[in-house]
Length: 383
Image (cartoon, rainbow, N blue to C red):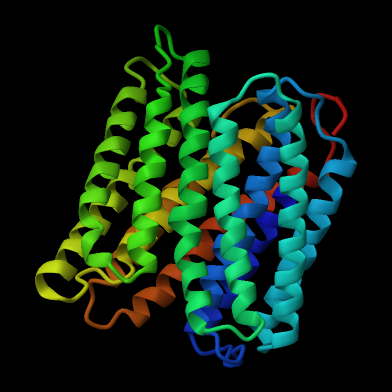
């Protein structure tokens, strides 16, 4: 699944850059290109990595037997075909391909949740990280269903609601849940004197904030989001301060916390934008808060976490390395470029430049990752 995700990180963004630049003019009838971009990235590209990770760690978190190929193969094939068909729809403007792509994605998503819920039923104790991440997948499933309602002739507002749910309702809770469990664990293994801090209340507060944010978004009350987003910014800033290593730490660990900085920053941008809507009746930042979250937080931590997991599961040393370091640093520049674009009087050129920069930054890292996935483990173990 990491192989599929790594390929589509490039293919999906190549389509988006070509669409912004006017090289791709065909569109799926009734669906804005920006919404196609949002559907691809939020429900297909990033979730492929997420399902690959969760199908690996759920059994470990709950003391169950690890996944077999019959657990993950149907999920992986459904997600692969779903993404391929959706990309075909994006390139050629095919409503049929989009429908089939959505259907396959929904099938793979549901199959994965069945597998994951099976381990949850067998678990002897309840794990808050398991339940939090599973709830996020359920929100994502609801978003997929809403998108399908639009495909079946429903109002365009169903597709709009689906896109709005993806970043904050699906991806943010999963990223934060994994960070809450894994970041202190990683640090505790390599930083002298590190004290793990994983308060369950933090995830409960996060979910209250996420759900309130979504309600405001879905009922067109975005001007009232700002108190919720200030609380979330404070929560995430507090967690970052408590997690940050006070002693010497390896670069592969430090990048996790550096990438996390974008989360409280994005919540502050959301809050200021919401306050602007309340006071002036207009948005000050456009989609800048969304892309601080999506490119800065999701994008940089994708590089950091996937690099770490890929190294560990291929028998390599847990090192950042120059290729991953280039991708990680480059993603911060791409995020700054994309966030700043919405503050410019003529943002189109900046949108095009940031999409192209994404491709250039990710290309070496993706090629190296694909090579690792296609070759045997270096330590001689199966895989």
